[in-house]
Length: 323
Length: 281
Image 1 (tube, rainbow over the protein chains, first blue to last red):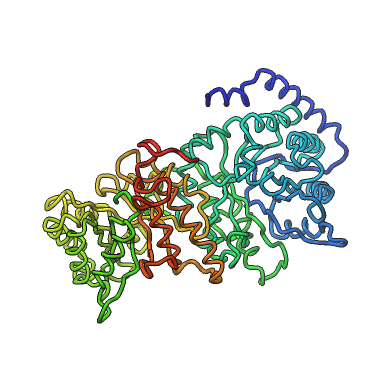
Image 2: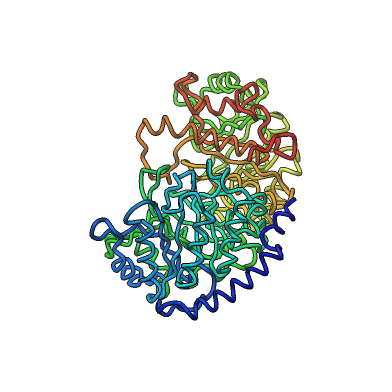
């Protein structure tokens, strides 16, 4: 049965044929696209050489996303990837997203939209729970803007979202973008990654954001990443999701900067890349130790893995004390 | 570790600060626990003398006892301090007298400051020390990471591990951690899930009493449910045995997993999905 699942997503003759058509269309589409600025070809893995910044939105006039300030803050701190939630109004409306994307293209910054799942209200407008519609829209946009690197759906298997995101429906979402632009990636959010989850996703995703939800301590993070690679068995990349902000289930405090640093060290070393949730881009000063800590991992930063996040995740087993 | 979670209990103090052994045994029995872990430190209520009194009483009560020895990073357990071979011989001899002495734990075994002490040749000599006296006594140290390197490092010189989950506010990822680590261990030794009932020094949040009441029991219940299903057993750290009443929410949660409790896996903790427990993914 699991082999059949795999076939549904990867080995459909129709899918391959349409993917080839899509690729041709993509090539022509890029050539014919309106002047959207130059974007560097992808290097290394999909999330960039620094941790990708899922940033707290910077608000401008009328509560809209301050795109210029966002791009400037990302560039100032050497981030080359940003994740942006699409919700139901500014600063995270679809309009805000498109303005961000248009500005990110010439800036050489990859953009990842995050779609809201049913368990969080399915509030991404205008498509809401029509995730196939969303994926088609994004695939077309990605033909115009190659900075649109991939699409995330948050909390894929949490609560009631599990009923929506059946294997069959995930396959439809995946095929929707494959037929238009197979270079656009589908990389949903998960919190558990055992054999069953890996088998359920393989062939229908281009990777996962696998979140570490301990804001106090990183003992076990290395194990979680290393051991999950065994069950994934090179079928898709694993990107390490790291929190830099308190959340509904941990309201007491943000992680300490040293805890964030340690999580990023482990994530960059043992996963295929890292993404940081709710990174505060403002203020861009010493008063923002979380931003300063994340910046250490960007190119020219002070961390051992600065600019090399996720590039060295194939390694021999770690003996205790080797780190 | 028994069919219920093993209780690493907060000590109940009696006169002169000594361990109140009678109250401890009474509370364990009242709540259906058949296993207790007990730290040996340098004075009451955690002295070696306290431990020996607890062991003698536990033997009669049919409760397994696991001493926890402190590693160099946490000072020492008296009287043997850093002579862990000496400790293991002592415990092996005691276990011949008291079969309730089921195994020995060393805390924070592979934490950075302790690696100089617990080299593989040294901990294999600990293992051999007890094997030569009583191979039924188990050596099951505490770890926080269990990847291929750690599994290979330990295999052959331990009888299992207490593998601790350090997230006190959520359990996302715990199932993966336990299931996937079984793959790297590949049946070379059992994995027991370590679950925190109490806050630890590294948990910097200071939840309000209301949040504590609402949140912590639910998280503990979830962690025990996953641990009992996907590990070979469970040990619960800092479980408050007192008060033995409905006011003690954490004790109530743990009790639900003991034989006769209300949890689905009550009395079947560690039997696993491949050994008769329904997989509740």
